[in-house]
Each structure stands twice: as structure tokens, then as C-alpha cells.
Length: 365
Image (cartoon, helix red, strand yellow):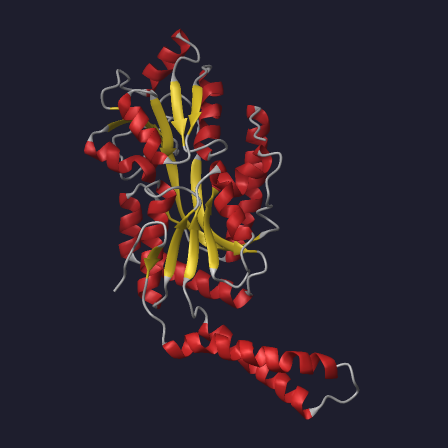
């Protein structure tokens, strides 16, 4: 049976007890024979006991590699429950756990535009048991935005694989007088800085994409950053803010329920799950595009066999019609590929967003 629980959310199927038992046994062997091997390996002839210890250590290493994962894997989500990143993490982790018989624990660690969660993954033991679902904001944008980012996504993370991509959507409450994007622009031109917009944090794709849009439209909004989606949505519906910009998966349920009105999406083509919502480009801003991607990574020194096994498991889950349909229903599209493909995207998008950050003048301490 697969269960999902909040904060420490488990997508679970039990591994055989014999595999769990390997770790303490091997640890005991390492403690017993490791020192002996090291003491004798410097001599011209290795004692029989040291040789036996070396053989046992090698056997243990091979057995543990075959057994991986033999205990729960923690998948850090660097945003609160209920947002787009969280929804995607749960859908995909659930399928991986079911298909592979693994236990995956979802651990929400929000704050600082996703930096807190990513940093927790970077500082975790590189044993393959702590991962993070990063995205464009905290892997490609924040290195240029923050003066003192505690990690380097290129050097400090091992890319596992891409999971999904999604455009942003500009929404207002159903009670808002704004019916289309042009109405928002007109209101902002009439009263500069009077119109507030929310995002899920400073340095997110939504924040910088809206900065880009303001330059293109010749307007100025007031940015109100939140740690996640839920409080921003409450304030939007309550009238404390006038507009929200976030990924489609974050807001699609409220759009479909009629609670929110979608004014535009930021992809070049209309979103398949919101076919009646025009693109920003269609609304008069040619070639405007801002899409966020999501991918799994772990600490830089993760074993290569663990990375390969994880990549294969996530790609397998993402190839199923079940996951594709669930992500499309959330306004996202599946992305797959090798660890190398994801690592390359982190590097190239880092360069691209660095130019946008510099152009916008945005900076965070």
C-alpha cells in the first residue's frame, strides 16, 4: 500500500528485511577489519587477516550497492505543502515508490526562495538517501541574485534528472474588475506602484518574469513576496493584493473552480489545460516567455550507481501515462533525460538568468 503524509510524507513499500540487515553487518565488518587493513597495507606483505578484511569490505560494498536503497529516501521540497513544486513531488514520488518498492519521505523545507531546502540537501550525507526537487529559481536564478548564497548548484549538487516544466500564469480574484492583461497594464499606468502582485518569493521565476514584463509594458507594480502559495492566495481572494503570478500547477485548481480568473500564461503556446487563456505574447508582448522546470538532485559526492538507479526509476515513472496525465492535469509537462542533460540545463540557464537578473537590477542580501 502507498501512503502520503504531510511534512514527513511517505510513499512507501517495504524492502526485504535482509537488505536492511546488510548495513549494520557491513558496518561491523568495516570497524573490525578496516583498521587492520590500513595498518598492514603499508607493509610489503599483507597479513592473511588484513587480506580477508579487504575481501570482506569489497564484498560488503558490492552488496550494499546492489541493495540500494535499503532504507527510506528523503525528498526535500523547498516550498510549503500545496504549491506547484509540492504537488509535482508527491505525484512523481508516489509512482516511483509504487513501481520500485521504495520508501520516499517528502520533507517540506520552505524559505528564502527555496534556498533553505536546497542548502539542506547540499549539506546532507552524500549517500543517496537525501534528494531535493529543485527548480529554475533556486538552481539557476539565485546564484546571481543572492550575494551570499550558501551553495553552488553546479559544484555542490549531483544532478539526477529532470521531472517537469510549467509556464507561469497571471491571475486575479474572480471579483476583480480586471478581465484581461491589458486592464492590469492600464490600471498600473494610471496609478504607478498602486497595484500589488504576489509571488512565492524573491528571486523566483515569477518574480523575475514579472520584472521583465514591467519593463516590456512600461509599468511598475509593487512586489509582495510570500514563502508559498497558500497565504498569497488567501490575501488575493481577500483583496489585500490585486494579482498573483505563479506556476500553473500552483494555481490551476483555483482557476478551474472559478475562484481565480486567469489573464495570461507565460509560455509561447497556450497551455493545454487552460486552452482559453491567452499567452502574454498574444496579449501584445511578442516573444515573451518564462517557463520554470523542476528536477531531482542530491549532494555532489553521491555514488554514481545511486544516481544511475534513481535516474532510471524517475524516468520510468515519468514515462507512464498515469503520471503524464496527472502532471498535464496540473498544467505541467513531463521532462525526462540523463543526469548530464539536467546538469547542462542548470549551467546554461544559470548564464541566461544571470543576464536577466543583471538587467532587472534585482539583488538579495
